[in-house]
Image 1: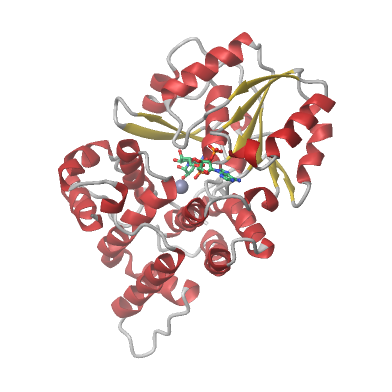
Image 2 (image 1 turned 180 degrees about the vertical axis):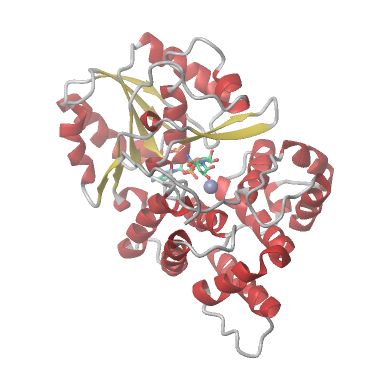
Length: 389
Ligand code: NZQ
Ligand code: ZN
């Protein structure tokens, strides 16, 4: 394991059918003024809204609502939410939805008592909160981002064509609890479900494809990836398969709660490319990643050959006999491509509305990180976007 580290994850998880009922004693720990954050209305159609409201009423809470939090939540929506939360004197924020609602709730939590501009402080300067942080709880309805058990919040600024994620250092930003009821995810459209499955897979890849040292995190990552592949296949064929959906829900939380990043460097360039696409197209997050992944991994493969070969053998069960290392590594990526196609993921940026003319702006919006096998320059980023079209 590289370096020294501290590991603490304070988020309490309530997992399984009917887990929402477990928040009743939790709610007593927080004040009366609750802000409920939710999206475009799926929770009203599937009945989750009524169940959550009942819990809050039974706990004697005074509830204000921030509804209409969109996928890829915007800074403008956050500003609207801050005004509602301030006038309600929020003691607690409950997010009910996918990663967008959970992220929004965390961004709100660090902004309610901050007088300045949250976009500048948290997204451009990556500063830590200097004000009291309002506690957050989550009821997850879409699996993928891991936002339910981490301190990340991704906010989009369409005017500046930027989508920026801040992973806060403060443990107080992390949800105090999250409800993970796999049954709540069964109403997700197939498109969103597979987008989330690929998001989980890519979170693990981002932490796996770095370094050549021997460390526990990579072995944990391989186990998680094997389950995401297996359960993903089943869920795509039989979306109502509870076993597969519940495994995916648990995989997602462990894929991005910092556990498998411990003791190693990490990459995250697929997310930087995908976020640039998201800022411009507003496409589903997992699909932006799917469309750029293979051109990126094929490009960096020679620089991380040992790990790509290991990925092929340990994760995709490719037999290295009779193959060169390069051939084994490429067969692993081909197996991943076949799996991605079988799920019905978007494999080309043009299917998300990206055109050749947008590439210079995409390159401009891409943040370059240095933890992976190859530090890309702008020309290489343009090449990868072009190959992803
Ligand atoms: O808005 P509603 O009506 O709720 O509909 C949502 C939305 O349209 C729908 N949905 C969610 N649960 C449903 C459902 N529809 C039917 N039944 C259900 N049970 O699904 C759509 C997508 O929801 P969204 O929350 O946007 O998806 P996701 O969970 O993929 O979150 C995406 C956001 O999270 C960020 C992304 O960048 C993006 O902004 N991420 C956050 C991360 C983190 N905090 O660590 C890491 C990730 O890499 C990611 O960047
Ligand atoms: Zn992601």
